Length: 185
Image (cartoon, rainbow, N blue to C red; front, side, top):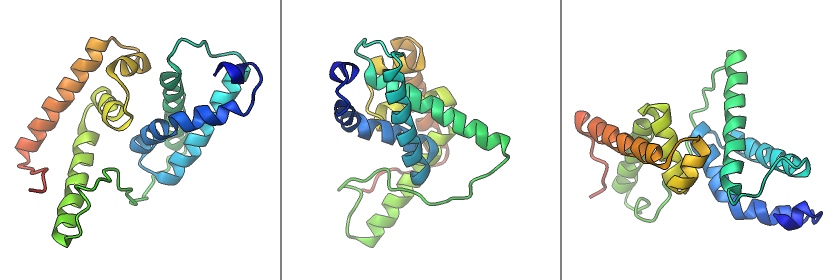
């Protein structure tokens, strides 16, 4: 970071590579469109570079939270523009967000069950209140600590923990009400 601020333009690549996965995953899980996520990811780091060059970042050890906040604001801007244009996306392509060996058995029955589990989880997460959904996405898919989540959302750590707790309670309640089974065994 300091090397870039001191004029070493090549150091930005190291910063981007260091935080690429967490930032991209956060964007993708929020907007659920791969090509748009790629565009917003690029736009995020363009804004990061511009902000760094203009001296609008104070190095306080929270670089990732700052970058995710920029991405979050760009996502909000995108949805505002989309809403103003009254456009509705009918892109139903879904990316495999839960890519793991456990969920990717060769057995066709296991593949079908795994696919249904992913769809059910996505629906449950999408039905959570916005503040709870944001904490779940940041924690489990963005890999942020509760301290980083608190900084990112502008709340205390206890509030972030409480939102996660209520999100889990709400998801368990929805699972029970719908008699969902979210395991492959």
